Image (cartoon, rainbow, N blue to C red; front, side, top):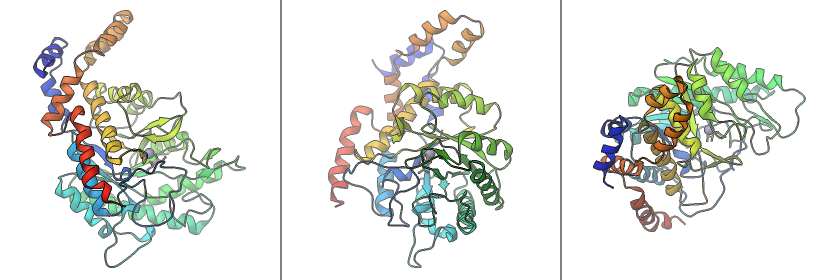
Length: 416
Ligand code: RNT
Ligand code: ZN
């Protein structure tokens, strides 16, 4: 079946595939730099901490800013759709002046990232790095009972607001800045509220750094548990959502779909939050049994999340970022499969006759609804996806493997 005949089929459902392709091509999704080097960064030699873990040892990990940026360029050329670049503070690039600790980082340490973003005409998102650092004391940062530790990390957060502001000013595109800490306890705590009150106070101090909320969008990300932090997480769902709700003029809630109990679904939480928040943010990932951060697939829950954004007309209210890291397969493949899967989910949602299905629900025609929902699943989506790839100058799925293998043979394999 060709694109033209697929287009005709969708017309019968009241869907204009050309218009959908054009619209989706302009919706930015943030590509995370940390898939390329297993969340290592350039400012430390120590291990990845904070209760997160990358598993696997596939060849070709990026070791320098040049390698990482060249890999990201490759990925961007292999993925259709508009992008933003998502950078963590540990990816500071220290020139001749040398190392600066996280409480003292400045915009100039991220100039190469700004140059990189400008070269591709893209926006930049940012993240303070509250892990993989000797000043994480007993697993705690912003919630630590030790004042000096808290102060160090508050200063880091403030420095990151200034850098986010620099990103927004330089690119002309708002910068989403996500606050996530791994603070918590492996075993049952004797005080659950104290750390949360300290965390609350610390975020408030970070957000006291001046910024224009139209340009810098701080977010707070919740979590359920981490490795070695199984019994208690300071930044739990209730804590984080309540913080965002009571600081609505200063920050947004961020939901990572790996950070909930296994039968909870973020797809159902998206419309709930959209009732109250003008804007929300997402980390799109794939948890397998735990917060494993496998590459995103075009699976049912991913589709359902995209549907909630699209059919609530919220593409401009939801900041979408990918967040996963897999070192067990070619990292470029992991990056591409995840980015492309989310693009597929958005395209799939936009090609659905959403208004008609919604009307069936409101008319209580629930038998017809279930039949129609199943009917829509076998529409010729693949042809429209291929056309979307072609229009965006990206390979189709069947062309992808050869491109990744070529890059592995000519570039990645030399990194030994
Ligand atoms: C960890 C959080 C957090 C990190 C990134 C690297 O569980 O999801 O967002 O993955 O900041
Ligand atoms: Zn996340």
